[in-house]
Image 1 (tube, helix red, strand yellow):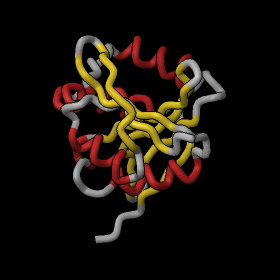
Image 2: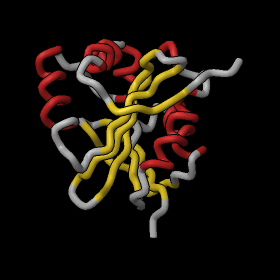
Image 3: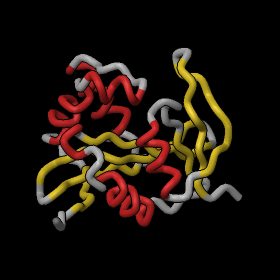
Image 4: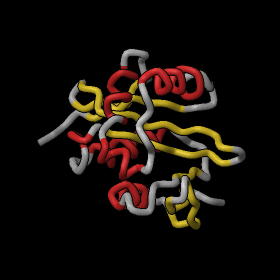
Length: 152
């Protein structure tokens, strides 16, 4: 079955869906990212994420329906990538195609990712796109892998 997977700029109305997706307990567990209450979430997205012109942020759509987001940002001297998909889009190739599209648009290398070590699906996805192991980091006492794409 062919799906039409696209990236587009994030609209303010997308934030409600992103917030709902973050509330999924299994997604939060896998990502080692605790869900935020609505006001805190909206404020973070509007001021920190969308408010920083150095960030590259895209909504992921599947057959015209909002499926999640993918973005890159600076953290000190490193450019990081992150993404979030609604559970109904897991294990269907959506992440693979969306990440490929995003990596065509995001040209900065090296590009880093730090998925929770136990999030095997995310680690596989990143490695499938050429990210290589670069060590580990701790976030709130949980081990995350540090992966890098295109280190010079």
